[in-house]
Image (tube, rainbow, N blue to C red; front, side, top):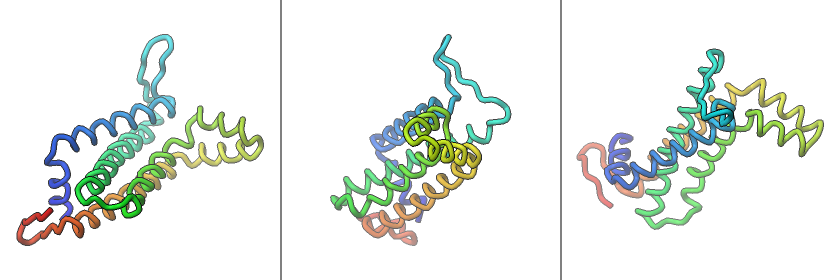
Length: 167
């Protein structure tokens, strides 16, 4: 079921390019926000040995977000359904990526300057629980993937036994 839905969406190069673009855009954004990419004195990507798990989770969040968002766009375009039915897919991806980015330094300083003492508490919490939050965001995106796949299966009438796809 999931393989057929995946093939249905990504048989078009348009959707494959879209997924790759979303992945690289989100990956670059999360790397900059997380402090893995430096622009001064020259462009540098540096992953300290103690933060390899964070880096791996950023890759996983960006890749899974690229898949889920692309599948949601495919669902919108193919079935001409309203945004309400696919809003959970977009919201799951946004929450997943947002939870992965919230604990980063530059975002933390913004939270502190806006909210004062409450911002310090929130930033401290986000910094201490950065890895669990990224894992939680990945779980949210994976659940969203399965929900989106199920929705596509119902709407496109993918039959797993006969390998027949009706659009």
